Image (tube, rainbow, N blue to C red; front, side, top):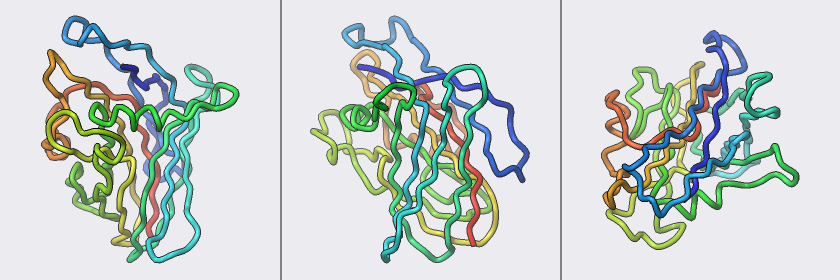
Length: 220
């Protein structure tokens, strides 16, 4: 099994800044806790792409986080997300290493390991993983593991590569996307249906963070 991780360093930005800060953490090696049959070579994720397609029709809205020089150098930047209140969108999330030629799309590899990955949406969001007091948008999962292959272990849980986002209240805030890697430990799954609620409650989660990206959000 591969992980899809990188470490990007950047200082936190003020709330009013148009370019949001990123805090992404390298995947940890848990040594003997992992199944030694798996390969833990890290992949680089330099770009996260969010596509919001209005359910009622209209042009998709695409917003990206991009770190064109990888580790070191300048910090990556995130485009500001602008959505409309009262509109429902289908959100698809894509991960890419754009530092190679041609760019490497890592989303397919995450789909192939859907039972080991979970995308969480938090910030000024009402949803399974967020308990924000100010909810500019509502999030719901729109995919499950069996959409990408056989559901071999446990429940058929969401993955979070496809989601439903609904604009609620006009305002400004944050929209944060976290990809977490949750491989089995001692042949026991770490990925469970309780993890979104655990994150919303501030409890520690198992596994490791692959990518954690924060975007400025405007709903009008």
